[in-house]
Amino acid sequence: MINPSTIIEWAEAQKRQKFTWLEDHGPRSKRPRPETEAENKLRDIAMLDEVIALCNARATV
Image (cartoon, rainbow, N blue to C red; front, side):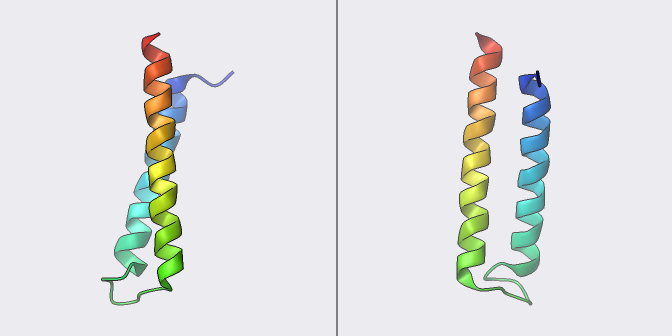
């Protein structure tokens, strides 16, 4: 079984990747991609935030 702290580390790394992508290819970048791709990255970040919150809640129980 994977423990919550390992999942949190993974989720934080995924978020960093998404933020880097947004910096490189988001709407305000020099090489923007279609808006739907940026929206998907933002949705992914929100979902990862929820995963982190759930893991933190589970770790405190």
